[in-house]
Amino acid sequence: MAPSTPTTIVTDHIVPEADAGNRVRTAGHFGWVDVRGLTGPVRDAVIAAALNQGLDGIVADDPAVLSDLPPTIRRILAADHGDLDDALLLSEATDPETTAPNPAAVHVIVSDAPTLTRACDLVRVTPWTVLTFTDPTKIPLEIVIAAAENSGGKTITVVNDIEDAEIVKLVLEHGSDGLLLAPRHADDVVALAQILTPSADRVELSHLTVTTVEHIGMGERACIDTCSLLELDEGCLIGSFASGMFLSCSETHPLPYMPTRPFRWNAGAVHSYVMTPDNRTRYVSELRAGQPILAVRSDGTAREVRIGRVKIERRPLISITATSPDGKTINVIAQDDWHVRLLGPGGSVNNVTELKAGDVLLGYVPTEARHVGLPITEFCDER
Image (tube, rainbow, N blue to C red; front, side, top):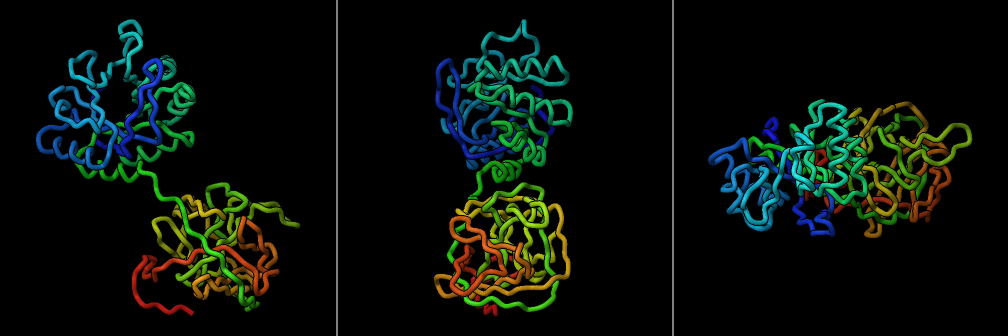
C-alpha cells in the first residue's frame, strides 16, 4: 500500500480484545496514521502527536520505526512477513492466489467490480481490512460496509484529507470503523482527533414556569428548515435573552390544515438567539443555509443538524415570559398561532396560544453571559 495523499487520522485509543478465531472487537471509530512517507523530525513529531492524541495505531514498513513504541498504541507493519513481536502484519491483497491464507490484516485496492467483490469477501473473514478506493464516489464503501455487517472484523478506509475523513466517518450512518491517513505534520493529527473524538452531546434542561403571555402585534419571525428529519420531542433552543432559552417544538405533530413538516422549527422572532454547537448562540436573522444548529430532545440529548433554509415572514407575534428555578427571567417571542408549539417535561407539546401562567416548559439556563455569541463571565442585564 503506497502512502496516500498526505493527510491524517485520529480518535480515542481503544485496544481491541482478542476474540474467537482471531477476531477483534473495538468500540467507536478509531484512527491509524501512515508514517511511511515521513522522515526525521517530522515523522517523530507525528508519532508523538499520535501518542498524545490517543490514536489506535501507526503504520510503517520499517520495524525500527515501530520497535520503540509503547504498548498503548498498535504497531502495524506493512509487510508480508516480519519478526517484530506483537506487530500486526498488513499484507497486500493483490491476488487471491498469492495472498496468505486467513491473514490478520490485508490491504485491498478497490478500482472496479472484481476488486469490489474481493473486498467484500475479505471483510467477511479478515479481522482487519484496509481499503483504498480509487474513485471519488462513496458507493463502493457503502457496499463493503454492508458486507462487513455482523462479521466481527473491522474496516479501515484510507482517506485523502480531513474533509474526506469527515465524510467517510458518516457513510451509511455508521461509517468505516477506522480511518487511515498519511499526515503531513503533527497538526493534522490534532485536527483529526477532533473529528473522531465523540462530542459531549447533551444539554442540561431546566423546568421554566410561565408567568405571562402577551399578544404584541406584528413583526418578523423565522422558520428554520433543516436537512434532517426531526423526532417528535426534538426542538431547537431559542429565546430573547442569552440568559435562558425555550425548547421549541418541530412540526412533527399533526396540524389540522396542513401536512407535518418534520424538518422544520417555527422558531421565533428575528432578534432571537438560537443555540448552535460548541456552546455558541447566533441571532436567528443571521442564520444561513449550510450552517450547523443544535437539535435537542426533551431528555437533553443533542445533535448537530444543518440548516437547509431560513424563511423570514411578517406575522402576528406572541411574547411568553417564564422564570427559571433560580429566579431568572426567560422570554421568547414566537408567531402568534396555535400551530406554534413549545416542549414541556416528558416531551409534552404546548401550543403557544393556549399557554397560561403556571404552565411548565423545558428550557436551557446557561450560567454565562454572551458576547458575539460566545460565553463570557461578565455583568449583563437583559430585559
